[in-house]
Image (tube, rainbow, N blue to C red; front, top):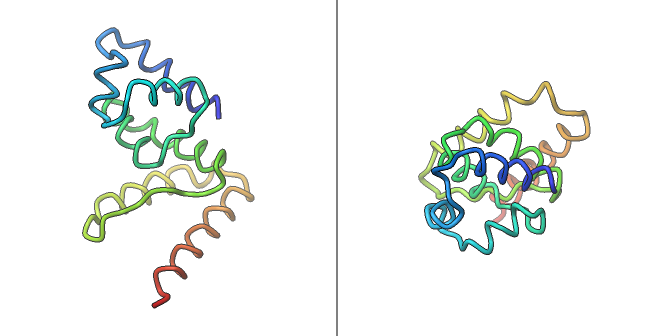
Length: 124
């Protein structure tokens, strides 16, 4: 989990215009929660990772952070609005770009997560 927080903190500290309070406010979270993530004491949601990467101007970092977060928590937490196909496509692209770098266990874990999510959606 510390990889996630370390990277997020290092990116923020490398940008003198990116203060903790302003970044937290733009993400819709508290400064305290952002610091807990950066200290490795909380794992951010997938939604928050994507918003963070966009907020700091480094959307490509979302790929690695999502993979670390999925690995750390053992599941995908991204929740989509019913009508937001853009977010679904973005996640698909992020995973597809990194697929060949994943271990067999990580690939199977992602497949299992998607399978479970689809089976839950299809139940009445």
